[in-house]
Length: 344
Ligand SMILES: Cc1ncc(COP(=O)(O)O)c(C=O)c1O
Image 1 (tube, helix red, strand yellow):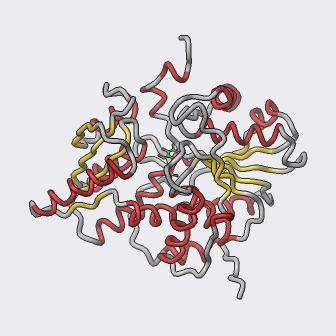
Image 2 (cartoon, protein in one colour):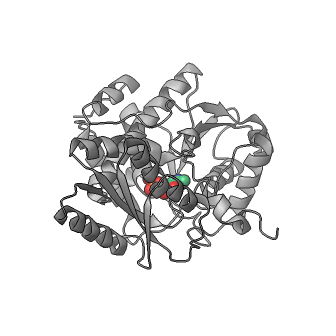
Image 3 (tube, rainbow, N blue to C red):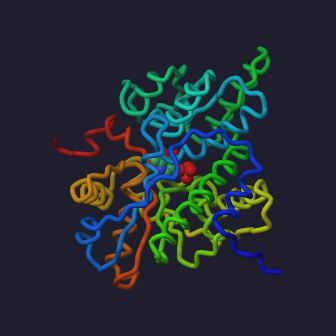
């Protein structure tokens, strides 16, 4: 039996079953980018969902994620967070910020692989909000995850109640928050009487899983282009479908996605994760100089480059509208100015 599409209010009602702490500035604005759209040509209207303005120390997608993660943590009696990723992790910065706001201790294990450890960008902010930082040479992914799990076990043995970066638990909850973001966008588009031709977002994980789930729940027929910032050693669409389905399950909804429902595109990663691409640089400078909106070289500029490439390739008819979901990440540009303005 086909599953029904839902109204934005019904998506929100489904998420209300889950514990949540209000942390983000919501709803974020949906703004049109007329000068940017005119520059890229093709007669397509471009809208931006300003999730770079979610608050929690300089915004980004993790502020939405954290509403559900901290809800889960507080409901389970946690008194500290044990988290980790790369030194310039937006995720860790936002988690440290939420810990500060809620009075929880934050322990960060940061992989310094190829990243400087001067206090700049996200790392500076981690220190500023009072996180305890330790560096490691372990790679992000399974290696770092097992270090974090073992540190959490040590804290538990010492009588603490740690909530830790445990992907099967935290990724589906994070995805729920982006199904809700899609409900927010659906209402904003309806108020403008617009039907979108595509969504774009930077993701190879929770955010994309949530965007794809939200698209399915709300019945958007257009593509949701998930522009991967990095390659993982697993099948990204299959993992995202699993996470989207686990999110739907937590919301008590019968909707399920197949890997083929996830339009994950790895073709904008080159020359590598965190290394700027010429197309990303063009996108970053175009958006900054036409609309005074910042992107970052690791995530959002490359996703915006995909939007530009598709519009220039004539994928969307003149007069149609596309939506770029800005996931934040801006603090990283201060840590790596040489990658943002090469030659200066
Ligand atoms: C700025 C920014 N955009 C997008 C992403 C991708 O998010 P996710 O892992 O939820 O897919 C990240 C992840 O760290 C990020 O920091």
